[in-house]
Image 1 (cartoon, rainbow, N blue to C red):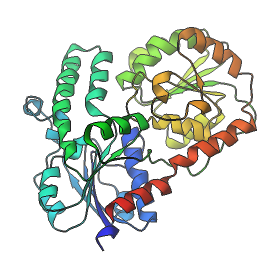
Image 2: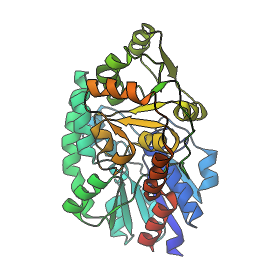
Image 3: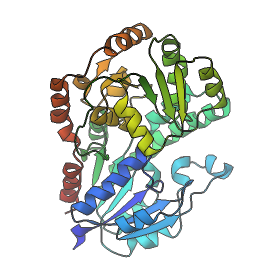
Image 4: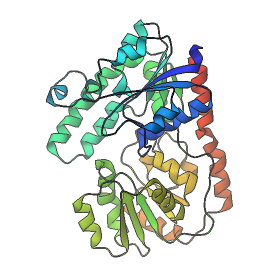
Length: 371
């Protein structure tokens, strides 16, 4: 009976599944249900609302408020953990013997209580968080935010030692899983869960270059503005920039280039159509943390996938992409790939390589751990 029920503690309400972390959680819930596991979901209503879709997907769903305020920034506990400390959660977690999967360090406030209660405990690591926040510190321009990211990174590095305690750590990328195994042991690599069942690439060629990402995230906005735009501004083909919450500064800058179209806040279907019909998906990052789900989206559905080295680190997907290291190479590869259809042999290579990213295989690994 115990192996058929699983508590999952999520850092946010994982519906709609429209950004990296919640995509992994939502499609994990779906895959676990298909594997016969009844999930009891606990999630924080951080900018989101209770979801009927989740309540239909899970055996039971509990919602908790996420706190905010200066007092949590001055806490010795990292802000992302201190602000997720619902007093009612332990009662809902500890009333049975079912195992618990914590999604990210963010949610591990009740971890030790679960261990003392004799529960089997797993932690899914979406990033090595102290490295992720250190990278945010390096790219952030606002001095207040920059200081917050630096302090949070230092707190997280100390707090991370809690990972000695759970029964299993679930890494999301190869290189982070290697780090976690070397440092804490008991780590299993389970790739990111996602919504794709099979590779489906449109034949022929597209007419435009696509850059997409959450444009309010400093990392995405920064690499677009500082690295990609100086090249895209001089491109001889149409360019589409698509993503959430573009700033007024970006909107004004793109208005100066008649061949660049901005698609703000696209729906899931719009984003799917943009990725499938593009000739080139330009997928860039400055951070090698975690696995970038937009890379998987581009490989499962898009034609040419043009990436920089941090996007590939730990993914094992380098053979499926075209790599660029600087602006000169970016310009050269944009010009070259716009003329070339994706060969069938490349599609077959994707199908073979991306079998490792099967949701069913990931769910079966979790099922074996909790049994």
